[in-house]
Image 1 (cartoon, chains in turn green, yellow):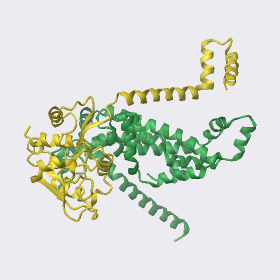
Image 2 (cartoon, rainbow over the protein chains, first blue to last red; image 1 turned 120 degrees about the vertical axis):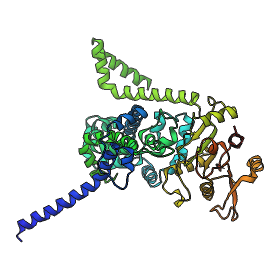
Image 3 (spheres, rainbow over the protein chains, first blue to last red; image 1 turned 90 degrees about the vertical axis):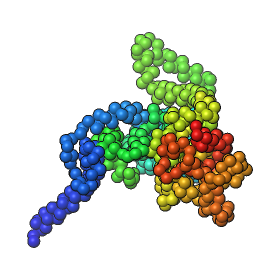
Image 4 (cartoon, rainbow over the protein chains, first blue to last red; image 1 turned 180 degrees about the vertical axis):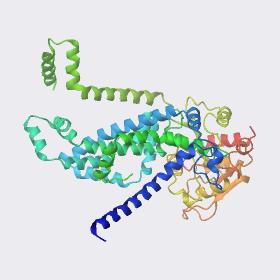
Length: 279
Length: 229
């Protein structure tokens, strides 16, 4: 076998493996969409098992779900929570990251160690004090209450600190020679250069906020203020579950994240590569 | 400081002289948009925080978790209305919370990784949760965690006396506390929770949160559901 044929064969094998893997990854999504357009009987039928709907494609399931559950309110609450969490996380993390990465002040290392320690503690530990704070502030059942745990982020601080440390010292020195004070150096020179790290942080924050189930369930007991994840959790009924309805809801719920992914696909991939994060 | 501010103000006023209102607004926005946005946000947050802190209903009369049920027995349901009317608590003053969105079974791997169980732990340890209902076997298992009140505690003396023929026992993991079964729950399978609302299939039991400070509200709830209202 010559080299060219062997290379071609390797490539074919690689493509076959990747296609199979991609297919496996897509099966749950395909199952979700196909179940959403079946009847409940078809959805729960095991023998015979139907991959595709047998009695027509019931697109009206989506309309039914949209009417039954207040999706407009769920979308609004979720998007508001994501927006404010992303803004707050980027704002606080970039300032803290700059301070830890570029400034010199007493106790810097100890303070940064405290930030890192926070990353090592399970988030459940913070729930009691956070709940009590939100409760005492009177922020239960409000967007502010939903956003509260995302105002500061240890991961974001670490990510941005690394980003600032990677920038050359000359830029800041040149800005200083031109008469910039610390605030101007930060705002006009350094912060714009960490844009890619901030986009990564924004994407991670948005994803974690979107799939956060526990916090919305704790602080939002009112259906008018709850989010998509918590709203979906309530859709199972007492005497059984209408799977097509549930799957139609799930399809509607993932739409915002698919849109965000499509828009920020490049930054999304870059973000994972630069931060070494996983979802 | 004041002198510096005056000088800055004069400097900026000089720059704005002779400009139209639109040009002035554009200049201010161009150079101070960050300050404007930041101060506006800070002012909004201060007003919002003060308003919510002074007007929002923060405390609870009673917090009940109706765990592991798919029945609609949360806030503003018939059960909730009935209890509020029976107890005489004013929801405008403090909250009466019936949380029917918690699904966990401690007997299965100690509910490890279950977010609803974490929520139960959070509410219990924070002293927010007053009582939890679930099927008797599951409650007995949950009692092992030490997060349900020992009903021999003097705070529960009246409840203990009133319902001593319905007690559910559990041996806690904390062997220093007790190696014998401890009463941690009350069987209320004959209550309206089962006969009228059918919230569980295999009976119903109630446990009191170990940090609860509102035992009187729990007693009222027991009287309400067991009194055939």
